[in-house]
Length: 289
Image (cartoon, rainbow, N blue to C red; front, side, top):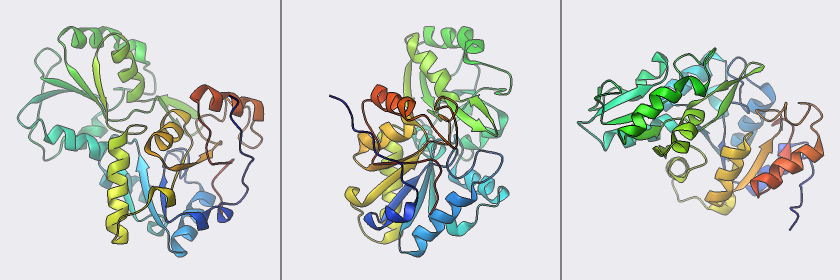
C-alpha cells in the first residue's frame, strides 16, 4: 500500500493549537552544534507563550545539565524550552542499576560526565563487566571500521553494550559526524548485545512524557503530544512507535540526501518515508512559527 505523503507546512502556528506538548529534537532542529536556528527557537518560544510545554529530547550522550550549558553557549534562550531529557540521563539510570560493576568506555573525554557520582569503575576492555559507548574517541577523523577489532574482542567476551547515543550521524556545521549508534550497530551485527538508551527506543520517551506531566501538573495525553525531529531512523520511527504525531524537518541530517536544504526533492522524501514504512503528520523545511 502506497503511503500518502503530507504536503509541506509553512508555519508551525497552523499546527500548534492541536497540541499541549512538544517533544523536540535538538541537533538538526534547534541547532547544528555550531549555531542555533533562530526561527526554530522563536517557534518553540511562541508555542510556550500560548500555553504549550516544550521538552527537548535529545540523543546527546551527556546529562541534561550539560546539554543545557551547550544551549546557553549557542545563545538558545531559556524561554525556548521547559525541560531537557537526554539519552545520557537514561544511560545514567541504567548504569545506576549496575552499581558496583566496572565499565569500559568508548567515547571522547568530554562525555565522562555520564559517570559522575555513580557507583561505577572505569576499566579496560579485558577486565570490564560491560561497555558504555557514547561515541568515537576522535569523531573528526575516525570511522566505525576503526573499531572493528576492539568490538570483536568485546563481543568474544560476551559483554553487554549500553549505547548512550543511538544516532548514526549528527550535524556539526555542514559536516556529518559518526555517533555511538554507528558503533552499536556494528557491534550488534557481529553478535554483540546492545541496549539503546535514546530515540527511537521507548525509555527516553517515557522519561520525557513523565517530565512533561510533572511540569504541567497533570498526566498528558499522547493525542495532544507532538514530536519534532530531522531523523527518519530516530525521530520519525520513535514517534510512530511511541504513538505520537511527528513533525519532520527536512533541513537536517537528510538534507544532502534530499538534494537541497531549501528545496528538498519530493520524490526522494517519499522514498525515505516509504523505506521507513511510515510518514510524519507534517513536514517542514525548517521549524518556523
